[in-house]
Length: 146
Image (cartoon, rainbow, N blue to C red; front, side, top):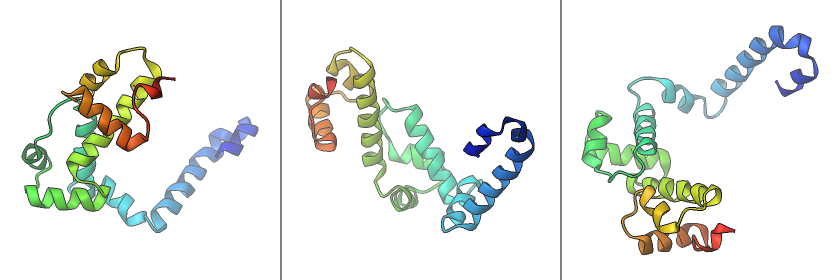
């Protein structure tokens, strides 16, 4: 597909064909089943993907597992089991990682204070935020400002 940039006259005709080949290879490959489930309404993977989207959109809000499970149309135990199977993390661990990655992004692009960024991503305690940040990234948030 990228090579088509060298042949601008061919893009309009060949681009849809190459896209179809990419889709075919993805769906017929090792992960094809998971990709199909991801876009199939009602599948466990699709429901967990919706939960992940919700977590990203509500990063600064407290996580109530029962509410999120209900939002996905699943029992709490089923939600927890499928979430961990798909993401390799519990919902709380996943949320924490999302928060910390967003905080790191904000630290890199903003001149805001670390305590403000911690609050912005949902941490109530700047000291807890700093401990978890250092645990994940191996460096304190203050040292990551550079």
